[in-house]
Structures are given as C-alpha cells and as structure tokens.
Image (cartoon, rainbow, N blue to C red; front, side, top):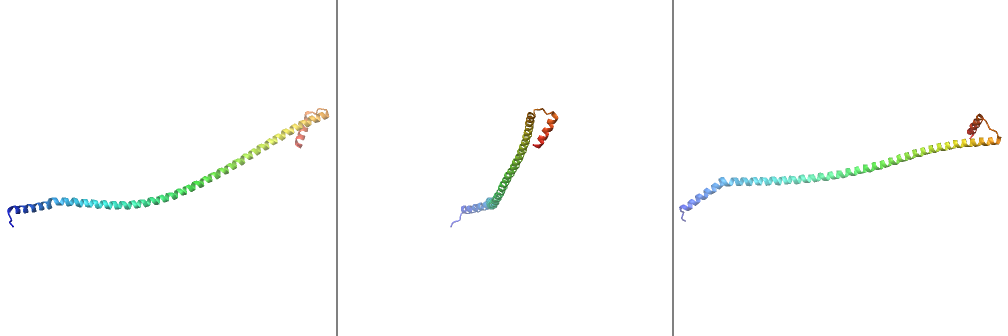
Amino acid sequence: MDLNATIIGQIIAFFMFVWFCQRFVWPPITKALEERQKKIADGLEAASRAGHNLEMAQGRAAEMLKEAKVNSAGIIDQANKRASQIVDEAKEKAREEGNRLIAGAQAELDQQVNRAREQLRLQVAGIVVAGAEKILQASVDEKTHASLLDKLAASL
C-alpha cells in the first residue's frame, strides 16, 4: 500500500474536521438536544400533574354536586313546609275573619231585630191608645196618654 501525500493530507484534514466538529459544532447540538429533552420531560411531568389535578378537580366537583343536590333538596323541603305553613296560616286567618264577620252580622241583625221590636211596640201602643180612645169615646189628655204608653211599652 502506497501512502502518498494526498492520503496523508486527507487523513489530517479529516481529523481536523472531526476535531473542529467535536469542538465547535457538536456541543451546541448536544446542548440543544439536552434542552429539548428537558423541555419534553418537564412537559410530560406537567401533563401528568395536570391529569392528576384534573382527577382531583373532578372528584371535588362530583362531591360539590352531591352536596348541592342535598342542599337543594333541603331547600325545596323547607320551601314546601313554609308554603304549607303559609296556606295553613291563611286558612286560619280566613276562618278568624269569617267568624268576625259572622259575629258582626249577628250583632247587626240583633240590633235590627231590637229596632224592629221597638218600632212595633210604638205602633202597637199607638193602635192600643187609638182603640182605647174609640172605646172610651173620649180623648185622653197628653200626660195620661204618655204614662199609658210608657207602661204599655214596658209590659211589652
């Protein structure tokens, strides 16, 4: 094998090229690859944490939803109880108002009956006096007439 100057020059150039690439080209490439690898690892870790946080959030949301359903059921029950209580109170007030109106109507009716009786007494007294005048065929004086009417009204 013949070693001549071109082969030796090519070997020297090749080693210089390898040395140059190792010294100046390869470190930035490896550094960029390492940074990219670190970013990917951080991204995967963040995704894992986010997945875990999502599961926890879904669990809390489910718990909160259950709690909200229980609370809403309680509120609905309270509202129904309050509604029935209001209806009962309204019925009671209506009964009381009806009883009060009935009592007022009864009192007014009693007053009208008493007025009618009083008017009837006065009319009967007038008729009795007129009948007594006709029977006696004589006029009774005013004092006697008033005292007779009072006695008659008291007896009725």
